[in-house]
Image 1: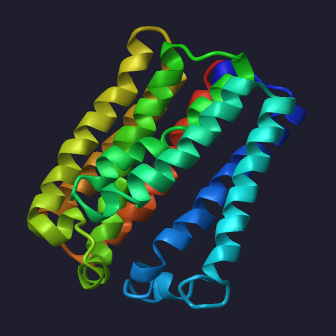
Image 2 (image 1 turned 60 degrees about the vertical axis):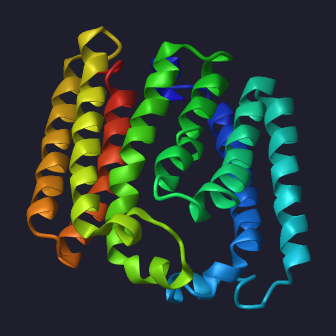
Length: 260
């Protein structure tokens, strides 16, 4: 929202948008728990204690809860922000539940690549809330998260590969092994870093953003390259945790760039 506003947006608008998006994400998560209850029981302690998988919440109740949150999100965003923002939040919800969770996750090792589009929609939600439209810069924000998702998630998948294998989920490390996964992480990291630098050269962002993006990207690439050369849980864990900080700091740089 700060990037779309080119400054500080209304705090009330920020709060309402964040609440609406949070409801959409919560609804998608609840529906995911219903659809994945069978494999959640097999993928280790990280997921077997989830409410539906553990039997604490009956699946019909979780389904109703997920649908209610999703509907409330749409009503709130359509009524207090704009219809485009509400539609985008709903699209992300549906894509995550039906395209990624129900179809891709169990059918292809490229599940997280295509399914990553769901996680890349929130920046579009924020942009449309601030501006009321979608333009090329908004798609740049989408692209950043889309390209960031594979190296981020594959680093985690390397850490919990055995859990996915036990559940029969065809994540990349399970199907093609750790060596190919590390190679793909490097390739996507290169694409991500190049993509994040490009907007500064056509004027979307200024020098402050360029310096921060270059520094953050150099560290990301260095960690990805080290993981390729030394495929250990420690290296995967370092990359995974850094990727979280990377995305947060990159978006902070985007928000601060027009102000500084």
